[in-house]
Amino acid sequence: MYQTLLFDIDDTILDFEAGELRSLTTALTDYHLPTTPAVIAAYLKLNAFLWTEYEAGRISREQIFARRFTELFAQFHLAADGLAVEHHYHRLLDQEAVVARHAADTLAALGDYRLYIVSNGIEAVQQARLTKAGLIDQFSDLFVSDAIGVPKPSVAFFDYVAKHIPDYDATTTLIMGDSLTSDIQGGVNAGLDTIWYNPRFKPNRSHLVPTYQLSDWADLPQLLAGAVS
Image (cartoon, rainbow, N blue to C red; front, top):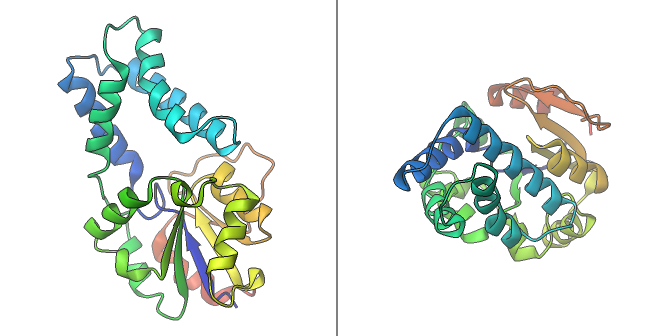
């Protein structure tokens, strides 16, 4: 039976995708820039690529923020300050804390487990967002990449987590997240069972095979009750 549960934040506990689109549209509009489907799609594609590069250790988090709007505007020949828009967008995004459907009630029902956060992001921002969402007290600790110095899915990230959770046992620890490349790969690297949270039923085109797949937080207690770690 599992005893320790590790959770991602963005697009797992919090509906990051909804907040991202709202913040992106507002930031571009505030700078009188187009918010056409083509521009939005190009940003999302570029941002996803840069985060994949970060997870692979090829660029820093700061390089993501320095590049994504600058390169987007170059692609569309837009005369705008990419860094200024980035700062404005980040301020907006940091205020977003839309809780995923059924996540709050489910977390509150997991009192028999030890709950921890494992996130690629900025520690102060993630703490503030979970506090705003009313969920911060559900977790024993938060492990965030900027404080640790390395991102998921690196082994070093999970080694740090293992050393800072009392009586840690990989065989009774489970990680749940939406990202195959970050959460599921990280779990595999650390020898953990994994739950791929996939509420939008995205296809798995990777080589990774999650231990479990979940589309609704409400189904998590039943999954845990029937699981043998």
